[in-house]
Amino acid sequence: MADVQDIMSSLPDDKIDMIAATSVLQQQAGDIRQNKPNWSSYMQSQMISQEDYSCVSSLDKDKKYLQENPAQCAKTLLNMLSHVSKDQTIQYILVLIDDLLQEDRSRVQIFHDYANKKKESVWAPFLNLLNRQDGFIVNMASRVVGKLACWGQEQMPKSDLHFYLQWLKDQLTVAAQKLLHEMEEAEKKRLAEVAAAHHSHHGHGGHGHHLHHGGDAQQHGQSSHHHQIAERYREISSAIDDPQRGSSQEVPHVTLTNNEYIQSVGRCLQMMLRVDEYRFAFVTVDGISTLISILSSRVNFQVQYQLVFCLWVLTFNPLLAEKMNKFNVIPILADILSDCAKEKVTRIILAVFRNLIEKPEDSQVAKEHCIAMVQCKVMKQLTILEQRRFDDEDITGDVEFLTEKLQNSVQDLSSFDEYATEVKSARLEWSPVHKSAKFWRENAQRLNEKNYELLRILVHLLETSKDPLVLSVASYDIGEYVRHYPRGKHVIEQLGGKQLVMQLLAHEDPNVRYEALLAVQKLMVHNWEYLGKQLEKESEKTPASGAPITGKA
Image (cartoon, rainbow, N blue to C red):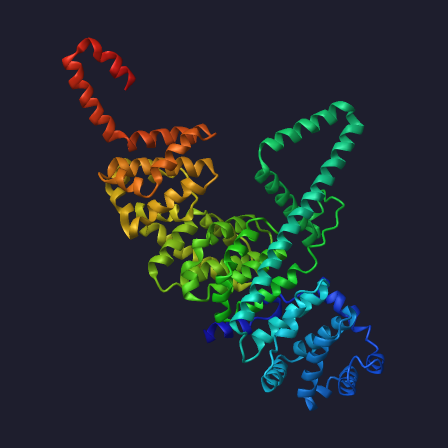
């Protein structure tokens, strides 16, 4: 994967989105640099040795000391991290180490060489700090770990790597939850202010109307509520990211902390996932699902960019590029693309889409990715993008590439390809293929391919989906499969589909109930035919008593 490393190491800083100098972490680091600890008092109280005092004092005065005494500097800094307990001092040491590494990447080897010589872990002093309460210490330690892991010749041991990636993943999850909660509180405050203003202008009637509206919203369920808040957050973050764009909108007087360190966590992941071995470790901690889950919650543009960047570097691995859409990457990114106003987010999504077509070694998978993009209305977005002018040539090139590939895939598209891709996307809708009797006559038996892969997905959707449309279409498809494939009823029973369809007869949505009823009738049709023949025989024997029995049937 050397070519991938070359591509990404050659990117200018603005392309890889280095942490901005205005970020919380960098602002705090600037303050910490100005407050040097009193090293002499540490030595006098015997908290550090004379040797460590001389080293750190010399480093403070002139960084050139490091070139002449690399092993001593590594020893002193790692030693002090492990033995000093005061937060302010640990903060300072971490900033000092980070500055040394940022100034010259090759210096990570100084720390690796020292640890190897002493047969000690270079990772332990920093990973231990991830358990501290101080947010700056935790995130600066994480930043240093990322640099040690990516800029040196030695990779992290598996256990440390697993711990670190799991920590990064958890931090992202918590940060995303905080973002949603923060916006929820801001939206409540905004609604309260609107209600109060409405009440003061219109009296009690306005207040009563507001309460009624709240009741309606509650009936729409929690997911709708969260979606509205996420949308509102997107609007506000849009205005914050781009003041001119937001000037015509009413932006509430709320302070969004942006979870302080979420960008730093994202940056660490951006670094780590450039290393191929680290990518697979990230997959084992269920990292891709986490990225997709957070992206689907509509976080702000900066976080969107960083997380999509992580997906992009993952797709440079052909195997991961092949598996990526099993996590629903294409539908989620297509939604963001249609909604996004930031050029850098557009650029990185197009780059992911390009990799999903170029990188898989299995041409059938690349074809499926093309079809998935077509079904997610990506072609419409490409047409819109073609009409815009971009300074970035990569965007123009990717738009042209994707347009050609998607148009070709549409021309080669068979109805079964289209159907299979739609089922695998889990976004079922009443596309023409479902209602085509010709399609089912010709293709019902093909649902048995690859060990009933498509049928298993349909059954899984019946069990897990909360979307009435998906449940309706899945029920209909199972009924059509059974109707057109002689052994279909037995197969569906074996896969557990019959029981799930029957449970949907009691679903709250009338369309789901209707489609489930039709599917159940098709599942039972052989029984009905047999019963009908038996009833005919009975009625021939006893015409008078036949009517009530037929009526019951």
